[in-house]
Amino acid sequence: MAEDETKPTGPDLGHGIPLGHLPDGGMLVGHVDGKEVLLVRSGPEVFAVSPHCTHYQGPLAEGLVVGDTVRCPWHHACFDLRTGEALRVPALSPITCWEVEQRDGMIFVRGKRERPSPTPRGRGAGGAPARIVIIGGGAAGFAAAEMLRRRDYQGSIVMLSSDDALPYDRPNLSKDYLAGSIPFDYVPLRNEAFYADNGIETRLGQAAAEIDIGAREVVLAIGGRVPYDRLLLATGAEPVHLAIPGADQPHVHVLRSLADCQAIIEAAKMARRVVVVGASFIGLEVAAALRMRKLEVHVVAPDKLPMERILGPDMGNFVRALHEEHGVIFHLEDKAFAIDGKAVKLESGSTVEADLVVAGIGVRPRLELAEKAGLKLDRGVAVDRYLETSAPGVYAAGDIARWPDPHSGDNIRVEHWVVAERQGQAAALNMLGHSTHFDTVPFFWSQHYDVPINYVGHAQTWDEIAIDGDVMRKDCLLRFMRKGRVAAVASIFRDLASLQAELMMERAAAA
Image 1: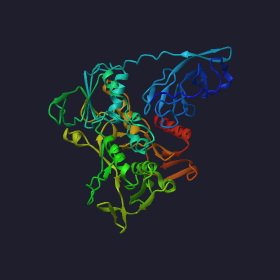
Image 2: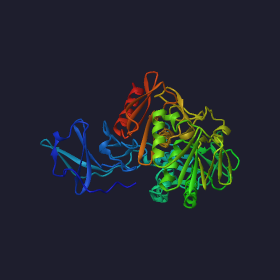
Image 3: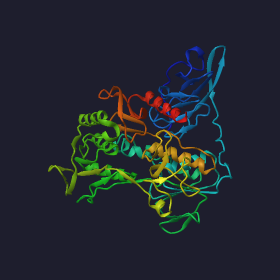
Image 4: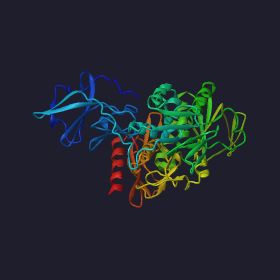
C-alpha cells in the first residue's frame, strides 16, 4: 500500500525546532516541502521518517519507539528508523527517511535520504543454496520469497501453490473486501510484475503430491518433479465443512480462499438473509461484513457466548452486544443439523430460512504432505526454534508448524496471519544459513464493524482475567494470567498498551 499523501500538519521542520521540544522516546509530526514527516528521538539521536505505516497507513506517532525502531499501533509492524526497512510484517514496504541535522540546540530536517541497498545475507554458513522451493502461496510462502529477494538471494525460487491466484491479503477476505468497503486492488500482496522482476517462479494451480526427501525433489500432482536444496513447507490450513444433510447445496459456502470470498460476494448480491454457522473470529467477521451489505444475518453456534473460549466472558458479552446493536440475530447454544432447501433446521426445533449459508466452524492444518514424507508430527509439523523439521533442509511455517514458544514454555501451533508471515521470513533467513530463532510474540487482530480487537501472546488456558478499563465502553485491556504471569493480552482502543505488553513479553522471555 502506498504511503498516505495527506495535508501537512505541525511545524515546518526544514526551519527547525528546538531539541528540547522532543523528549527522549518522543515523537512529533511536522512537514518538509509539503510532505508530512515524523521526528523520533531515541537517546541523543533524532530520526525523520514517514509518519504512516505502509500496511494500512497506521499513525506511527501513536506507536512505540524501541531503540532505533518504531512500532505501528494498529497491527504491530515495525520499522528501522535508520533505513526505513519494514522489519516486521504485516508491513512489507519501507518507509521514507529524511536527513536530520542537529546544530546549536536545534533540529533541522533536510532532503530525503537515498534508500540503501539491501544487506546481502545470502551467504551464511556453508554458502547459499542454489534452489529453494516453497510449497504454498499463502502468508508464510509469500513472506519467505519476498525476504529471500530482499536479502539479495540470487538463487532459484519456485513457489508451488494449489491456489489459482497470486498471494493475497487473506485477512481482508473476511473484513473490508467482503464488506465491499475496499476495491480488489487492495487484496493482492504484490502485482504480477513483482514476481517477474524478482525472479520468483510462481506455479499457480500446481499442487505438490509428494516430497521425496532422499532425492530432494517435490513430486507434482500433474506429473514431473522439482528439485530443491532447501524446502519450505507452508501448506496452510483448509476450512472444516459442514457435515450435515444439505450442506452440499450451492448456496452453502465456506471462506478460506479468494475464490471462496468472491463466490460469497456474488451470492450476497441476490440474497436477503444469511445464516452464519459458527461464532468464531471468521464467522463473526463474516457476519459484520454481510451486515455492511445490508443482509439480515443470523448466527448459529453451540457456544454460550461468542469468542468466550478465547477471550473470556466479558469480551464475549461485549462482542454479542456489539453485533446485536448492528442487527445480528444470535441462536446460541444451538446447532444446525440439516439444511432442507433454504431452511436451516436447528437442534432446538427452530428453522431459519436463508438464501445464503456460510460455515465458519474452524480449519484443519494440511498435513498430508508432511505425513507422507515421514516428517515428525505433533498435532502439526514439529519444528525446532529455527523452524527446521525433522528432515534436514526442510522447514515448515504458518498454520501447520508447531514450534517451541519461549514465551509460554509450550510447543504451540497458531493460525494467525501475522505469525505465518513472520515465520516465513525467519525460515527464509535460516534457509540461507543464518541462525535466526523464531521467538516472536504471537499477534492477531479482529475487526467487527469499527471496533478492532488486538490480541498479543498465547493463552490456551488461564487462571484469571485482569481487566483494566471498561469492556462495554470499548476502552479496555484484558490480561490473561496463568501461574502468576501474563500469558496474553487483549485490548480495544488501547493500542499503545498493547505494544507495551508485547515488548514486556519479549523482554521477559529474553531475561
